[in-house]
Length: 124
Ligand SMILES: [Zn+2]
Image (cartoon, rainbow, N blue to C red; front, side, top):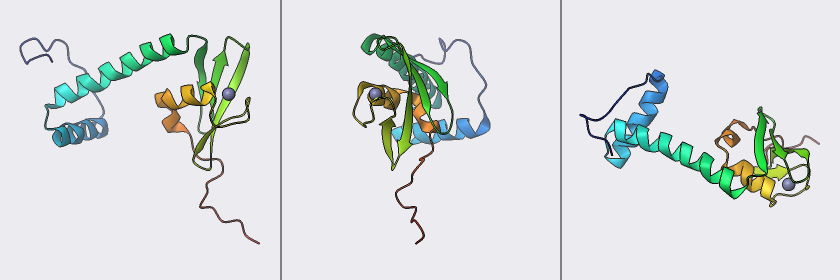
């Protein structure tokens, strides 16, 4: 990893984000700059991995209820949701298709809210 002398340009991050990265660095007993560089590098490497692993899938839109993927193979927009704490594909109607795996590999999966939480009891 880069030392202090060859650190290069710096960027500003939100205070809350800085605190989270600082906590991770402390847990791993590494410098904050090392942890921040590792996190950003992994993000970029993961994007490259997904482009190679599933070149026909692209993240199109994200909101709290779904991730929309463009599937070049089927020429469709596929919706991925979180139901009962499981990633669900509305197109394939299952939890274990490539769309689900791709969705889970996208960092944006963290935005999804469970549309049908398991611990939500239905009143009789
Ligand atoms: Zn699917």
